[in-house]
Amino acid sequence: MNRVYNFSAGPSMLPEPVLKKAADQMMSYEGCGMSVMEMSHRSKIFESIIYGAEDLIRELMNIPDDYYVFFLQGGASTQFSMVPLNLMNKNNKADFVITGQWSKKAFAEASRYGSTRKVASSEDTVFTYIPKLDKSMFDPEADYVHITHNNTIYGTRYTVLPDTGNVPLVADISSDVLSQEIDVSKFGLLYAGAQKNIAPAGVTVVIVKKELVGNAMDFTPVMLNYETHIKDRSMYNTPPAYCIYIMKLVLEWLKELGGVKAMQARNEEKAAILYDFLDSSDMFRGTVVKEDRSMMNVPFVCPTDELNAKFIAEATENGFVNIKGHRTVGGMRASIYNAMPREGVVKLVEFMKEFEAKNK
Ligand SMILES: *Cc1c(COP(=O)(O)O)cnc(C)c1O
Image 1 (cartoon, rainbow, N blue to C red):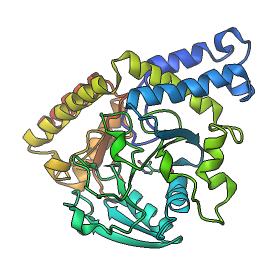
Image 2 (image 1 turned 90 degrees about the vertical axis):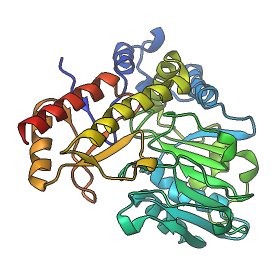
Image 3 (image 1 turned 180 degrees about the horizontal axis):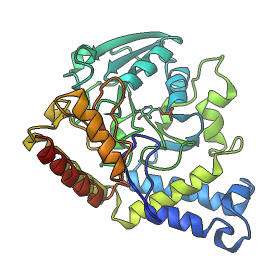
């Protein structure tokens, strides 16, 4: 069986040992005679999966006890509505930093429920950088400040968190969750759709400080109220059971590799291999400012559209797939999430070197 090097931005590759284990357990999970897809979510055996996954996330991310962790459906995009419905509840105001399509969408959705403000934006250069932020820029009366921690499309990330004073910081960590150590206590709320770094599409992880929950807007639908899901520990209704099971396998794999600290070291090395080459190449170059470069999503271009198209076609033929850039950036994007082995990046760089030599 031939597996390709899959640089997709999402859904993206899963660790091979996880796929193998899931295949082994497909017909009968731990001797119970059925697949996880077929079992009652109210069964003891499924409880051990979902609560096991929660415990592992708490352990791997070092989540303090005064935070809830729960699993939802609707993707990260549903959080663009749930966050304002649940948190924009004191002064009905929120501040946003605009660093790409996802922050724009979060901003637009929140604007339907209250008074929102763009504190800073990097749209002037098509999001090639993270704006410089300081405390005086934020409204101390805002109910929260929203950032997109890693910008999947443009390939930037925050290397320092903004100081928002007493205003809770909310971050979309869909594309860098579990890729590097973060201090959860610095945030009011974190959310991540699963399909970049933790599971197939279908489950969203939410981590929220307990004191922020309990004041949803009156008209908030039951399913969009965090309290509903917290009360029933992610099982108010049928959860995306199979996704949660794969997530647990991914978390076990990550723990076995040494946890987030070890993964961060691996990711730093992988990103350095690719960026060092981009910086030394006469043909390929990265598209964002150096100090804000993402470790997960690496956009790059050749000098002409013809060369970009040629590179993408030849890369695909050679087993480096889903490397075409987002339509708003053009060129290429290599997404090198946790599951991408070092070898995949090394092989890609070798291929880029050959391409450069042949097309001088
Ligand atoms: C992929 C992505 C989203 C959208 O996720 P869905 O699960 O498709 O709603 C939002 N934010 C970021 C940072 C993403 O990478």
